[in-house]
Amino acid sequence: MEARPTPAIRKPRGRVEIDIQKCKGCELCTDACKKETLVLSDAINIKGYHYVIVNNDACNACLDCALVCPDAVITVYKLQKSKKVNITPPDIKEQLRAAATPKTVPV
Ligand code: SF4
Ligand code: SF4
Image (cartoon, rainbow, N blue to C red):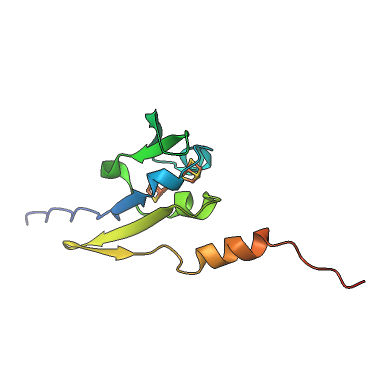
């Protein structure tokens, strides 16, 4: 009996979009990406920072870059059969804003 070919294991594929004009080039995302798909550009944005650019071919939609970005400028999509699904937590900006807001202490 002929052995059936093993089906190829489908790896999740991702697509990252970066709001480059809001990036401050801190490189937290480049350190967080295990696939090494993010690099700092030689060009600068309107704020004068080198911004991050992405090679989406290796992205597996793990979300690490979006979760570590302090300015929430990264959006991650999971690609599913010709459509892309936003998997970035929708409340990430609110969480960051709340964490950055100084707490008032009653006197
Ligand atoms: S989603 Fe994951 S693999 Fe894709 S760029 Fe971000 S950290 Fe890298
Ligand atoms: S973590 Fe955010 S602000 Fe920092 S370099 Fe990456 S995209 Fe830019």
